[in-house]
Amino acid sequence: MVEMHGWITIRETYEVTDDADNIHAIVDDINRNLDELGYPDLKPKWINGECFFQCALSTNHWGEHNQDILNIYYLIAKKAVGSYGLLYVHDDESETDSNVFVVYKLARGKVERTVDTLLSPYIPTVEDSV
Image (cartoon, rainbow, N blue to C red; front, side, top):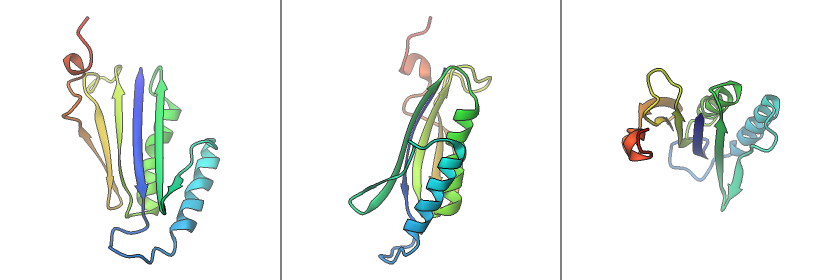
Protein backbone atom coordinates (compact mmCIF):
# COMPACT_ATOMS: atom_id res chain seq x y z
CA MET A 1 0.00 0.00 0.00
CA VAL A 2 1.13 3.55 -0.73
CA GLU A 3 0.17 6.29 1.70
CA MET A 4 0.70 9.99 0.89
CA HIS A 5 0.03 13.05 3.06
CA GLY A 6 1.04 16.55 2.11
CA TRP A 7 0.63 20.29 2.40
CA ILE A 8 2.02 23.38 0.69
CA THR A 9 1.81 27.07 1.50
CA ILE A 10 1.71 28.69 -1.93
CA ARG A 11 3.66 31.93 -2.27
CA GLU A 12 4.86 33.83 -5.29
CA THR A 13 8.27 34.69 -3.86
CA TYR A 14 10.39 33.94 -0.82
CA GLU A 15 11.30 37.60 -0.48
CA VAL A 16 9.54 39.53 2.28
CA THR A 17 6.93 41.59 0.48
CA ASP A 18 3.30 42.59 0.63
CA ASP A 19 3.26 43.11 -3.15
CA ALA A 20 2.63 39.59 -4.43
CA ASP A 21 0.78 40.87 -7.48
CA ASN A 22 0.80 37.68 -9.50
CA ILE A 23 -0.20 35.10 -6.86
CA HIS A 24 -3.84 34.90 -8.00
CA ALA A 25 -2.77 34.36 -11.62
CA ILE A 26 -0.28 31.72 -10.47
CA VAL A 27 -2.95 29.89 -8.45
CA ASP A 28 -5.34 30.08 -11.43
CA ASP A 29 -2.62 28.48 -13.58
CA ILE A 30 -2.06 25.75 -10.97
CA ASN A 31 -5.82 25.10 -10.94
CA ARG A 32 -5.83 24.74 -14.75
CA ASN A 33 -3.01 22.20 -14.47
CA LEU A 34 -4.93 20.25 -11.81
CA ASP A 35 -8.02 20.23 -14.07
CA GLU A 36 -5.90 18.90 -16.96
CA LEU A 37 -4.62 16.10 -14.70
CA GLY A 38 -8.23 15.20 -13.90
CA TYR A 39 -8.32 16.31 -10.26
CA PRO A 40 -11.14 18.90 -10.12
CA ASP A 41 -11.65 18.40 -6.37
CA LEU A 42 -7.97 18.85 -5.54
CA LYS A 43 -7.60 22.62 -5.38
CA PRO A 44 -5.63 25.16 -3.40
CA LYS A 45 -7.71 26.97 -0.79
CA TRP A 46 -7.52 30.55 0.41
CA ILE A 47 -7.51 31.01 4.19
CA ASN A 48 -6.93 34.39 5.83
CA GLY A 49 -5.25 35.79 2.73
CA GLU A 50 -2.85 32.85 2.28
CA CYS A 51 -3.15 30.06 -0.25
CA PHE A 52 -2.72 26.43 0.84
CA PHE A 53 -2.72 23.08 -0.91
CA GLN A 54 -3.44 19.85 0.98
CA CYS A 55 -3.60 16.27 -0.22
CA ALA A 56 -4.00 12.75 1.07
CA LEU A 57 -3.97 9.57 -0.99
CA SER A 58 -3.96 5.85 -0.31
CA THR A 59 -3.49 3.38 -3.16
CA ASN A 60 -2.76 -0.34 -3.34
CA HIS A 61 0.38 0.14 -5.45
CA TRP A 62 2.50 3.03 -6.74
CA GLY A 63 0.84 4.28 -9.88
CA GLU A 64 -0.26 7.24 -11.95
CA HIS A 65 -2.16 8.98 -9.14
CA ASN A 66 0.85 8.84 -6.82
CA GLN A 67 3.14 10.22 -9.50
CA ASP A 68 0.60 12.95 -10.26
CA ILE A 69 0.64 14.12 -6.62
CA LEU A 70 4.43 14.24 -6.65
CA ASN A 71 4.37 16.09 -9.98
CA ILE A 72 2.02 18.69 -8.45
CA TYR A 73 4.78 19.49 -5.93
CA TYR A 74 7.27 20.03 -8.77
CA LEU A 75 4.72 22.14 -10.65
CA ILE A 76 4.06 24.42 -7.68
CA ALA A 77 7.79 24.69 -6.96
CA LYS A 78 8.34 25.89 -10.53
CA LYS A 79 5.38 28.29 -10.76
CA ALA A 80 5.45 29.73 -7.22
CA VAL A 81 9.08 29.70 -6.04
CA GLY A 82 8.26 31.11 -2.60
CA SER A 83 6.11 28.10 -1.75
CA TYR A 84 7.05 25.62 0.94
CA GLY A 85 5.67 22.34 2.22
CA LEU A 86 6.12 18.64 2.80
CA LEU A 87 4.88 15.42 1.23
CA TYR A 88 5.16 12.26 3.32
CA VAL A 89 5.13 8.95 1.43
CA HIS A 90 5.14 5.38 2.72
CA ASP A 91 5.31 2.64 0.08
CA ASP A 92 5.45 -0.81 1.66
CA GLU A 93 6.35 -2.34 -1.73
CA SER A 94 9.36 -0.11 -2.38
CA GLU A 95 12.54 -2.11 -2.98
CA THR A 96 14.65 0.39 -1.02
CA ASP A 97 12.27 2.33 1.24
CA SER A 98 9.57 -0.08 2.41
CA ASN A 99 10.36 0.49 6.10
CA VAL A 100 10.63 4.29 6.06
CA PHE A 101 8.62 7.37 5.28
CA VAL A 102 10.15 9.32 2.43
CA VAL A 103 9.69 13.08 2.68
CA TYR A 104 9.67 15.47 -0.25
CA LYS A 105 10.53 18.97 0.97
CA LEU A 106 9.44 21.87 -1.21
CA ALA A 107 11.25 25.17 -0.55
CA ARG A 108 12.75 27.98 -2.65
CA GLY A 109 11.63 26.50 -5.96
CA LYS A 110 13.09 23.04 -5.35
CA VAL A 111 11.75 19.67 -4.29
CA GLU A 112 14.23 17.54 -2.36
CA ARG A 113 13.82 13.93 -1.24
CA THR A 114 14.94 12.73 2.18
CA VAL A 115 14.12 9.98 4.66
CA ASP A 116 11.94 10.93 7.62
CA THR A 117 13.40 10.56 11.11
CA LEU A 118 10.22 10.92 13.19
CA LEU A 119 8.08 8.01 11.96
CA SER A 120 10.88 5.88 10.54
CA PRO A 121 11.72 3.08 10.71
CA TYR A 122 8.07 2.22 10.05
CA ILE A 123 8.50 -1.03 11.97
CA PRO A 124 8.66 -0.77 15.00
CA THR A 125 7.82 2.99 15.21
CA VAL A 126 4.35 2.73 13.62
CA GLU A 127 3.59 -1.01 13.48
CA ASP A 128 4.80 -4.17 15.15
CA SER A 129 6.66 -6.70 13.05
CA VAL A 130 4.74 -9.72 11.77
